[in-house]
Image 1 (spheres, rainbow, N blue to C red):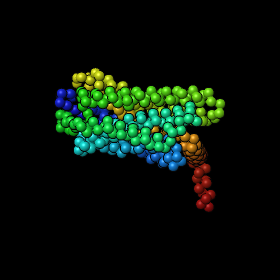
Image 2 (tube, rainbow, N blue to C red):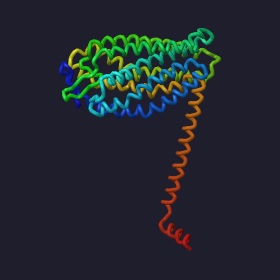
Image 3 (cartoon, rainbow, N blue to C red):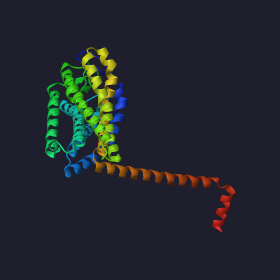
Image 4 (cartoon, helix red, strand yellow):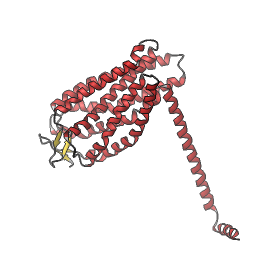
Length: 339
């Protein structure tokens, strides 16, 4: 069905979900799954080397993978014109995997920025905060808080039926009061506070690196790229969603507003999926070893690309030479071969 109806008789055109969402879901799954599996391996190597950063990176990857594993079900949902064919409990599980990916990712991106801040700005102090034990405790706390927040979804009905009797999963128009409270909490604790910590940490890191005489140029470049990738993930993947979620919670009181903001809101929700593709880039710049591996891999790809181009160019030139040969010359060559 292209139109959804709730208890307040709102009619919402779902056309954008059936056209744009399947393409993005397939892209994120095809690119994100192998990228995150490789990232998980590099995170394991970091943990094996007793690097606390590996704990945060591995948890970030696990959050991404959990969401990626739910994508086939969301893909089926939108391809069936927003008709959920599984149980309500499974709808809740897939919804939780979507939201935990957003907020667990934000939390661990924040942890990475704070860890790098302590390592760069205070390299000889606060060693206890950069220990394996501390990173495990922080990671456990983040998962407990997020799963506790998500438990709210299990206390409410998240399945609704439209006018065609199709089942909608995690869609309410207008937005419900109990969801407003969660949105306000997540805006403050799950987005604004982490982005403050991230901004503070990376500003101090950039200032310290710029002043540092002992830091090599390629190390400075790596740190700058880590900052750039993290900031871009926040700006592109998470900021639009939180702006529009807040707008919905404040102003969405009737069906007309819900219809007007529907497309913008769902595009912002779709942008959060790209987080799963962008997060593996952090591995390239998070530590010296992974950065060296990334540089080697990039050089290998460039050599392969250049080699392929040269062979293609040679093949085209040979074809042109053959085509340039006149028909009489071609016949003469063939007659000589026969004789």
